[in-house]
Length: 114
Image 1 (cartoon, rainbow, N blue to C red):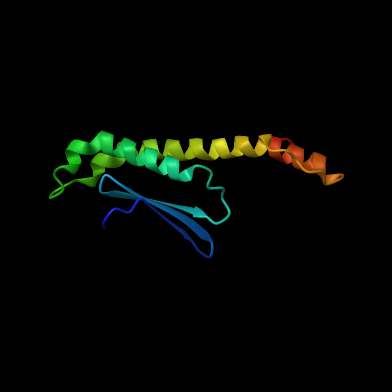
Image 2 (cartoon, rainbow, N blue to C red):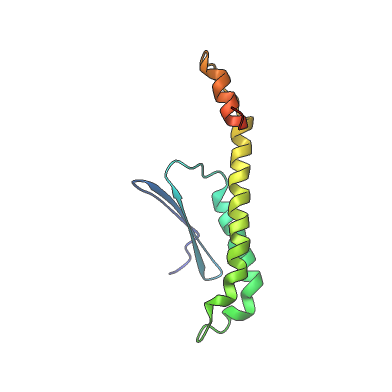
């Protein structure tokens, strides 16, 4: 594939970030409209973590049981949750424009109160 560093594809209702590193490719596909703040950095961290965890296993790809990567799947899920929690926190901290009597409702919605 050469030396691809990053490919961004934006389409109908999904956004994709494709990162190539260590001869590995990780593709993040998100619903269109989800903020992509520092997503490329997070995807690269995931590849770094995967490579450092499985560098020995990646040396022998002839007969590889992919179930050895189950633990990484769990770690990746935690990383994804953390990413979305950071986005939620940033949204709460963002200033709210004045929308008249809707302003307080927006503030309560952001803070998770009714």
